Length: 155
Image 1 (tube, rainbow, N blue to C red):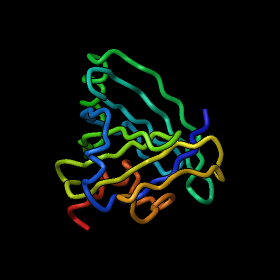
Image 2: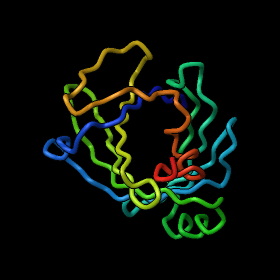
Image 3: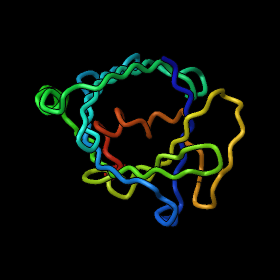
């Protein structure tokens, strides 16, 4: 139940040529407290409930628990969420032995493109594609819970 993840800005849409999968994501927060976030997500035709804990000092590692829920339940729970819906298209790109998930944000966060990579350890080496930009791991401004309250377009 531990997530080890690094997050980067994306420099260009060149990643689209390498994408193997695309899905639409809509999500919102039942609780976006800094110590814990409780998220409802619709990912394609599936619903999920996720709890994330506060990250470590680097923001790379944190508790994460997720379970699939019926999409009808996810639709109902979205109505109970705090204000601020996150909408994005997610692209999956395999680079070497790692899977990058690139999120192209829509709505109030349009213009923001982030890439995430999950690792087995904080010091695991990974290949960085040419379209990967500045690392923003641990920068809370780029957490979805923050973006739901402080959209990228208002920065």
